[in-house]
Length: 505
Image 1 (spheres, rainbow, N blue to C red):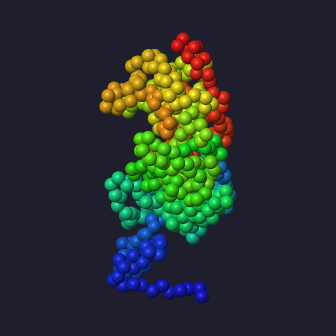
Image 2: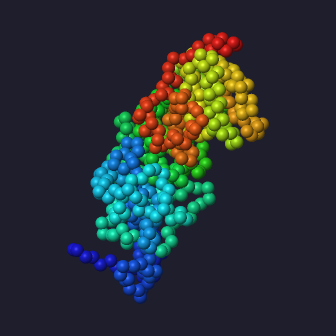
Image 3: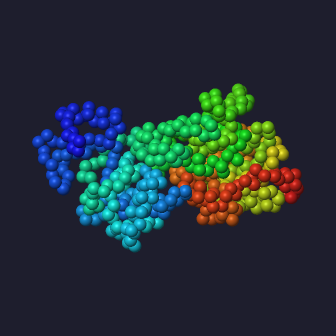
């Protein structure tokens, strides 16, 4: 009952490994038939053939917690090469509340002032260093050329090993070759689902209940941002945390779905007519489209369950109309999209935003600014659904014409990329059309870094600002601290006639 002999399979190693993969096991040991066990060292006679890439590493430090996490953010990892500890990356996934708490208690008495690594180690956050004595097991997708883990996931401590026994594996890591243009598959991630508190299985699929509705969340472990290792599940968890701030900007508005179900490195697609494929509890409305010459069934996102349903379709960004049901021809706000060329700097975008603010101030029009989450800025003027789209677009064109006169070298009203000068930023006033959409406030974007569209105080719109400051991690913490500073966009609208009179028009 204590010891069990494990039999072996002769000659049919490849077939046996196929069974390992089918049963989702970690791997197998391949041995030379005439070999012996070498005490205290590895050899080429016994090989670890891995299905899931796993490795034992030393914990060298930890970063501060971010967002709603407690105790610590990520573990800094290392492995010994000879007598020197080498940096191997960091991991912030694979923990639940209990493991975070228990591991923090074990790390606390090990804190030290100096780094256990020789020389300076580049990390993405300030680190609290610890004595390198704890060993943990991690799962990962592959190693970089510098032997840094990609997408590592914590799997637990190894109490049976000394840190000095953790050496770099002499055998190359077994990884699947990447297919050109496709994102690598995620390692299966054994962690808690933040929506349900249950363990996420290797399939990454969970069924939850929200607002009395059953919702299937599929492929939560699929990597959406390969460079950062962020998954579809991370994206859904962001919207789960941020839903109360996002939903006011979606209520009663038709949604155009921008779907990227295979992550940001794969080609996405737009889908408008989605209501017929949605569950019965998802609200939708049929609207006639002149361009398509047919009725389109638009989804209306008024609750968290519908929002997460859209996310599960692969909607990284959320794109609502400017107008609501009951007043579809009358937008609630005017939008100016500052759309830079590849040759514009973000400082030039900031300058254009401040010039636009100057014109709107002179007009007496209240204005709100947010990052696009990509390379531009969006400026909104509340209208209170008092004017139709044609009136709003004409007013917006007047504003941007004045701005363009102020900045003729850097801005243009030419929409066509072929006709537009390479170094000029497009002052887009044509976003003010029925059915036209932009990523809403607090929406993530399918861009490197998992950036998000962040409302700004005007005092923040200055040189030194950059969209990369606001992402899947930083924006929830920011909003928790300062609240929703964009809500005035949905408030009382400006008087366009008075604005034109103030401008002398």
